Length: 593
Image (cartoon, rainbow, N blue to C red):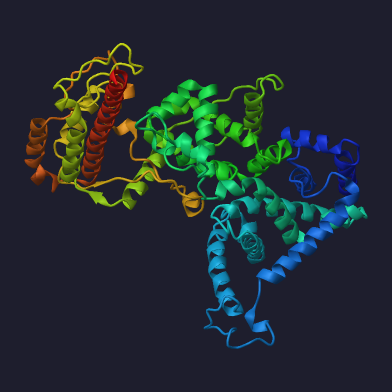
């Protein structure tokens, strides 16, 4: 019964590892998706991650050394003060705050372990294996020891989702080895490498080597080198929020993927995401940090990791798989609004053959060496993803403090008047820049925030939105700040913070999207008379809002957000124009001087 299985296992071992160029062989199998049913996937991963050396004669010694090292780490960091023996009771007692106190260290460790256990209990809840107490203890101990060995990083939410697949493949290989060992005597290498008693030790070694590459994706330390500070001083007066401030490695990475790789391979999709103002941090942080662990079922995820690890320990293929995933849902994204796009990106749709993404990624990286793969496009009903996007937007709004629309409007208008006052005082109507100036002529006139963009909506929706906006003052507005979060609870809940400035719900586009010519009238975006007229109208409808149904109240809230977003976009456009004019005048002054 077991003899054919044991024979097949020995044959596979020889095919994978008993040849002169075995490393190139298993790398090719990993990239081509041929390790899906392998009984030695964990050994291949150890080689990919450089846990094992290329020299097979050193495998047993290296493995033994790593396991001994982990035992010492556990002895150092996992301590029980009750079993410490004879100790100075002045220092070692439960009330001591001394840094050398075992009890003080014990309570600090308890807090860290509690945070890790909270995430571990949420690991792959659909799989029974990860609900076992011994498996959860292994995950917790490995993550705790890693955190104590790396005090500069400690534990970050999301690390448990990188460790879990490693533990799972070790378990699967150990199970297969146990069955085969009942029928045939395995080799000494097999017995050492696949010993089930050392699953935790091997998982720690593989996880630490993986984190050597992924560590900076979890780091929140800002890059404050002088070179990057100089790059931050951009000639554009109003850059995007994700482009301002000191750069964090993971943020810089996802920005580079969307702003350069995606732009290179699909300019239309890149422009569409930019128009909707969907920053890559919204979805990309989770994609990269977890190596797409939440976007695919576990069996498909293991195939993706086979290719990632086999390609290079630097995980360079991550960038191109990222782009390939966007291109797979390209048509659905381009035909969708902000809400549906958000649902597609945060709840990535299922894919029939995950290996097609790997082939697409390889082609994008090097089209000369890799054939063009068959193009697959996501073709499903988008209503589900529209609803998921709405849920994410509602969660974000619920976390924000309510704003008073009247106060916000007044402050925005006052800010705009202060910005435009110097230009108005210098000559009433701002003229066109001199022909010798290096700055382009100004853009179209800035439209009033009460004018809805007709080219974005159908006429019926346009009229309904205007009617809702005229009744919107009595309802508080809730906006979420565009602030990046770390992976973890936000990753587990799929509730990454959404930037408030989404153009699909704006009532006035920014200056880059205005159509037509480039003349400027010199008028501010919203006059005081228009403002007074607007608020006098909506004040008459306060009594009506008290009897509105829940659905109408939600529409009211959307209208208020649209109104505020329109004002923000108008002011942003005006600020950009004023900055250009200021630079023009400064250029003239420098020329005259």
